[in-house]
Image 1 (tube, one colour):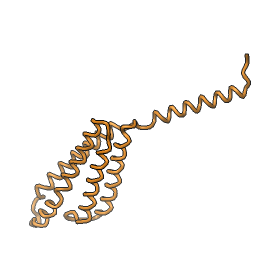
Image 2: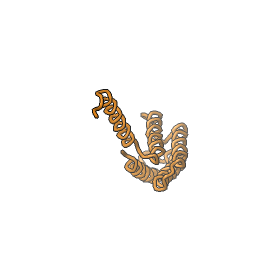
Image 3: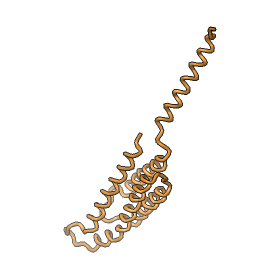
Image 4: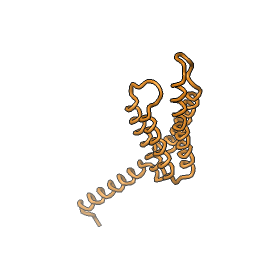
Length: 149
């Protein structure tokens, strides 16, 4: 029994469609990574927003910058709660907690800078905030690595 040419063409189209569907599903991040990718994208967009607000600014963070940082920390915490995979959620919650600790030090940093004599070394709180920033970046890198395709 010989199949008509049109049948072979139809079978070929179906096979190509199935291969394309399987390939596209393999290229998507796993389901548990979607909330993580949302958190990472939010972090990037907030970073861009905060950078644009403080572009060229000197001195301690302003109240507007502090508010933007608070919204960043709150947004990270909200997105961390949406992550279901335990190992990813733990790291995301750590990021949110570190961000909250970073923001909590901002009023102290502003007060220290305002009370500081000209030419004095940087206040201790700046070193603490720098250490928190390094930890945040490390945890974000862990999340990025865990969910990179």
